[in-house]
Amino acid sequence: MILNDNELLPSERAVYALRTLYLSFGYRRYKVSKFEEYDLYAENKSFLSDKSILTFTDTDGRLMALKPDITLSIIKNTKDSSGMQKVFYNECVYIAGCSGFKEIMQTGLECIGDIDKNSTAEVISLAYESLKRLSGSFLLDVSHMGFIMGLINEITVDGAQRMKLMHAVSAKSAYAVRDVCEQIGAGAGYADALAEACLLYGTPGDVLSRARLLVKNHEMESSLDTLENISRDMAEGGLSENLRIDFSVLNDTNYYNGIIFKGFIDGIAQSVLSGGRYDSLLSRLGRKQGAVGFAVYLDGLDRLYADMVSEDVGGGSID
Image (cartoon, rainbow, N blue to C red; front, side):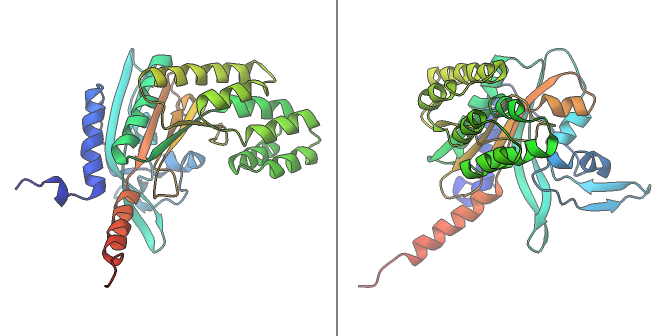
């Protein structure tokens, strides 16, 4: 029996559309098992979006886990090689829900190898195109770890203080940024720059010129150069209308470096796509190469569609 599009859930239609997209760019399907040894996740918990892990003991007495993440498994089970490994996946992950654990469909891609500006631009373009296939109303927010971290590292080298400042920036709270800066005795110039940086948001042409005025070191300047190059490439490819720069987008520095991004579609409050450059993760797992990729979280699509149908059914009027 052949199903038509109307018989598929929104998440199922998305899987087919994204698979076709990724295959057209030379990515190959990567299959993973449902299980992985628990130690992989225990040693990299801060990389996980959800820290709760469902475990069990196998017949050999090993502590195993249902996968809460796909990227860690792909990095663990691939080897450094010449050239570029371009893979995509469509797998279920298992995370904590309100009444136990739930299975969530996740798709995404990883580009592993000697990452250059072209491979990075391709992945960001595919993130943009992925969102476009999920919804006609979307935004891709892009940042670079080097801009905010370059400024934070000018202020403090203490790990706890760094985390406080990162949380304040992520919350887009200029007040919290100034408060932490005052606690640690940071100069007013740095506090003002960081408070302004965390609120910078908008089109590349608007934001990057304003960000140049806040530059304090080479790391910050280099990160803006990278963002400008990517923004120009996206514009030349006709992929800039829904592109925004948002310096409040941050991730764990133990895993991520360079470009990072999040994607949103209208009707779902949380991000439905998340990714970036994560050479630091490979280094932690004993790898010498780099990687960039993203994951798309499809569970929200079915809920959004169900809500829309419910509103349509209940939205009529009685004459």
